Length: 393
Ligand code: ATP
View 1: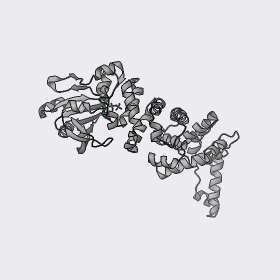
View 2: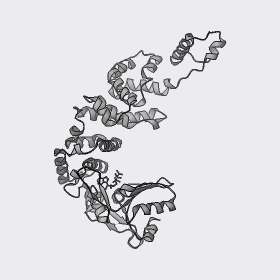
View 3: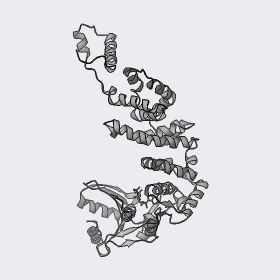
View 4: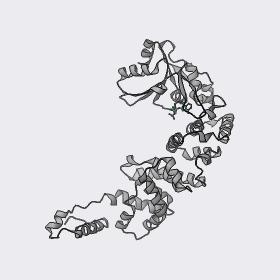
């Protein structure tokens, strides 16, 4: 459809970026990136008339994205040449040709394009040696000022390195180091850094990626509050295992907020957590949970891992802590197996226990309404959780 439509409108159309890279690497990638030489917004709207999907347009950037009824994501951009008004600013966009569009990209491996017009269908455009770099497994920037223009590319370089098992070209690595030394990290908003970090947290090789960012001097620039990165790395590695463990024991794994869990690690290990609360944009409730864990965490772990703890006591200690906090406590604990067993008991058994007796039942038994009701109900609850009450009678 895209080819026919582009031909009809008289535009050139190209498949670009990550999907072309991944085609060559034989890696599945279902995010379709298209660049149109022409009016990308008009093209996107007409394409969506045919596909009947959901469309979002971003007029300022002359881009659009469509999600088809089958859930395939198509990003459509107008071939553009970008001007950065000052380093690390958001780019200004102007309509231009495919070569300029590809030149503004981050690495040579992402600069390949495949023509999709019918007369040139399938022809690979390789202006910057991207195919060779993919084959040589090298990450290279396109021009020396690239990292100064957009320092977020340093994060991306390291992320691609570990995701694809590539090497960062020596010159590119040096330029990254120099960019960091020239203080460019402070030019980017923490919002952008945070988004990049969240992607990194979801990668398989999070610790390797962070370790490279540390070597480049980036971590101490963006997190001066943290002094022991070894502790952070060790906790992140344990956290990944903790998430897998949690998924294996809880039937409802969908609601776990991994980002919050990783933020807890950073805040817990920082010297001034107030700054980090702001950086991570944590809600009031999330801040309170972290403060609570800081003050009470070790004490709770101590009690929970006692040999003779009663189920109701376990329930009372853990009931107000969200699952992210519970996973964190298992990481923090020295008696990990014991702690995990207890948290598992709480999640899978204790917290779903309900009692079915009501005020009406008590009234029928002749108890006069009043504070005694609450006391009785609490006691029944305690005894039920402790396993002493087995039947309604
Ligand atoms: P993935 O989606 O698997 O992380 P991708 O290569 O598709 O990988 P995206 O983040 O979706 O990456 O970006 C799409 C394309 O936009 C990339 O191929 C890249 O060339 C370009 N790009 C993204 N961010 C930047 C940036 N900061 N500077 C230059 N080009 C970028």
